[in-house]
Amino acid sequence: MMNEILEFIGNNLQITYILILAIFVGVEVIKSIPAVLHTPLMSGANALSGVVIVGAILVMLHADPTDYVALSLGFVAVVLGVLNVVGGFAVTDRMLQMFKRKK
Amino acid sequence: MGILLNIIYLIATVTFIVGLKMLGHPETAKKGNLIAAAGMGLAIVGTVFVHEQQVPPLIYILIAAAILIGSLIGWLIAIKVEMTKMPELVSLFNGFGGASAALIGLVEYSKNVNNITQSTTIVSGIIIGAITFSGSLIAWGKLNGSLKSVVRIPYYNIINNLVIIGIVIFAAFMVATGVDSQLLLYTFLASGLIYGILFVLPIGGADMPVVISLLNSLTGIAAAITGILYNNMVMLVGGILVGSAGIILTVAMCRAMNRTLGSVIFGAFGGAATAVGENKALGSIKSTNPSDAAIMMNYANQVVIVPGYGLAVAQAQHVIHELEELLTKKGVNVKYAIHPVAGRMPGHMNVLLAESNVEYNMLVEMEDINPQFSNTDIVLVVGANDVVNPAAHNNPASPIYGMPILDVENAKHIIVNKRSMNAGYAGIENELFYNSKTSMLFGDAKAALTDLVAELKNM
Image (cartoon, rainbow over all chains, first blue to last red):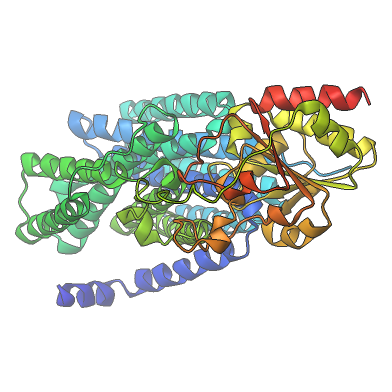
């Protein structure tokens, strides 16, 4: 197991760096957020996790047109991914629309 | 992969980081969300069109149809949902994201059984996606009330741990042997779905926001894993951003409720054993009526409103805003005291009050309002209970002992609106109600506040 991890890091040095740096960026970006914005933030982050849609589209693009299993699984994956993205961003927008300041 | 597509992904990744950052400030949050959304749109369009592959038209049509269907349903749900139903909606959308990740893994598995790195990512993607999907659906059911009770099978902690160990062994077996069996693959998927259910089922409704936040973070990790599979940077960075942000948010929520993540997951709230013997010295309660309460408020200098989820359940956000405007007009200094976990999620109460046009700067957070309670004539507690329970300060035996609360007992007078004397979400007695400075205004929040407003108008 240890060998495989080391091998993965060796073969994917760039990805490993990006992974570690992205973790820190995520922590830093979120750190000083007031509690009032936690719900919109969670909703917005939830929309972002819909980025998995990119993978679902890749599945469909790579699929053999006669491979109905792959096509239908990919199709459902795209629908669900888009639901997460569009629904997530739309509802976050709706929430934030309500934060008005005194004019 | 073409250089153009990589540039598109790079731009999208930057919009995610900038968008997330802007979401953290009230003035820029709305723009930040739109920027991230634009980046996501760009990434999706780029993925579909910018490549050198030969793709039959049928597949393009299918992709377009899927995107159209998903957008339409997602949009409709998003604009229709009531704001009180927000937490469960986030949970539902999150579950869809997890399911998407699991499905991708299902398709990719047999193509990659011989590559250990790839099959490790695929197997992890399937399992995390499956756990997120079924777990989010259970959380959704618990929050919308269709799954009411806390289900705890005997020894559930041990069983859950055994199941997760079993899953890890199962996964290691699949990766190591490289078996290409659809039966095994779907059994593996099912074991993830079952674990998701077992994981969330024993957790109480009060802890659900923490669970949703955790599952949200897991979906991010599943997306990032899929990103490694495709060597796709926008998925990798986007997913990890959500993963680490989600964990920070989860920990922040736990801290606000004075719970550790461990106690949420492994269940420290016994419920039954806590309240025993507490009732003896509580004394008697004093009730008041809208007209007396109105008189007191009319002559107060400063009134602090403490809204809780009961306010939202009764749909009384608009009436409370009316009350606050009326008092302000009469020269009373009115503020809202917002506990970090008021509502069902951190910040949920702010969204609900913002929906009824309460000014953002009238909402004061716990740390800032607590020193002001001693100068406050009247605190009006509406539908909140555990977040104003002094047991958090002075009863080490209480399950909420040590939880940061709003110190309303320092005010000169406290009016508590509640439907009945039932205990709060945590199921424990609140000695605040028996305090000699406290008057209880019984009744549905909306009805009671409407009466209060009517009385004030007559003065």
